[in-house]
Image (cartoon, rainbow, N blue to C red):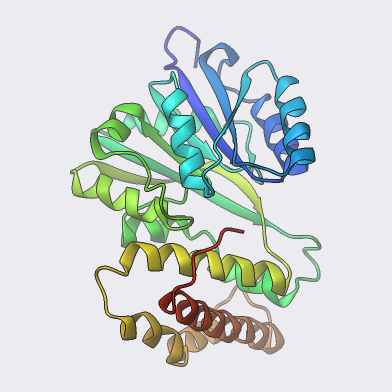
Length: 301
């Protein structure tokens, strides 16, 4: 691509208390194959703690294409909306502070978006990496077979995870911004609005970012609580209280069968570990829903 034919792109990155990984992300974005005078980076600090906010501000200042804004409303979708409101690009590209975009990420994402008529979103591949690929923790094994299934999200659920997502600003203007009231699943809600408006959705393997797998029980607990809260906030007006709990209280038999058939897991021990994490996730989910039903609030990581 040359600068003459390249549309202007706004890359939007929400961040919360994560300056070390944001630095890695910004460094990767500074080395893109896309012409550097054809994109901007908008970092949205989602009200980080004081010292981290100072580190983030200093870090962003060291990258000429990047600028910083702050969104105090808690939640990454509120932060993304703040970024959208400042974006000057014809195309919006979303990734997260803990992601590492491949060198061709921006170029490939723009090309894919432009190549499909009436394209509403491109969801790129999210490739997990691990602390020690030779010795995965039970949580990493679980992530390996369940996390960021972008192709499935697009083909079965009509959305893409915002860790790796491209769209046109005009599509965002047509279907509306993300739901700022939810702390999770805002990408699901928004993607399904894009589909309902008649736009095409595409999964693109070549549009790739790397993402660290969660590795600890505490991390998977926090993730589960956030996801449960987000989906509960989206669906509570549509379904009964009982239906919120039933899915988690039923033993995950189908998941267990699929796990034992999964060739990505090398042996019986790995398969048992993945099922153990699934039971943990299910019952953490049930407990979180009970707290929400009793009047508790949804949380973010």
